[in-house]
Image (cartoon, rainbow, N blue to C red; front, side, top):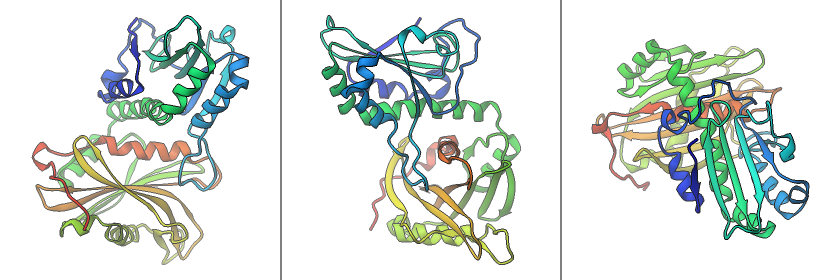
Length: 341
């Protein structure tokens, strides 16, 4: 059974930068399917630690609210069990965090195992000599712990999209925008024009959707917050609302969050906020990802939204966020560093 030990969680984080098919390769002969819903986490921990400072710290990390959701929802739904109960379906859970306090240990460290009893599965084991040491480790590495667990969920989404891609939709995207993108099963093409595609995925009481659009790059100012917001409103207005004359726009009550980041050596701008419908009563969260295609000198945006008025929104939003990692540009279109004027 393969085991990966890390003294620093940063090293463990680098491990997950491998492609999904490698990060979740089987390390056992099990053919059982992992149990549990997305963003559920089993924590195996004794009562004393769970009710003490360590448990308070760990819950604050794992159950921190997801930003830019209308109602508060935690990053993970946490179920704590005792070690004696960690068997059967509990041991087959998709996400497991085991806590071990051992005074003989010289230092605190984290280890990871994949597909131990089922697949796809991640089992993290945090071991330390004392409650103080365990608490300190979680406090220092809280962000990386969350990112690592979230990446495990993201890799599952990527794997699903690769297995159940819709080739005809991928071909359309490639022909229109010059990028490769796997479109997961369930999405349908709702609207098409020369510079715009709209896909949607309808559920009985919710929906997910994303837009792809492109327009000429006119310098670093094209990536400013004002320019991206104006472009979003221009293209989102093509999505009709439920009543005549209504259309999607960006909500004004809470300004979008704007940040730059790198993904696969490409500079992206993320804009996260809320949308509503002008002329009707609908709304929900959105997240958009924008980059510059140097080969075509055009701005390219993947704009994702969800609508779930009655159900929790976290899992729907996470799924559309994962769409970014299904987009691949040709090597010769990699951009140079672009600063916003």
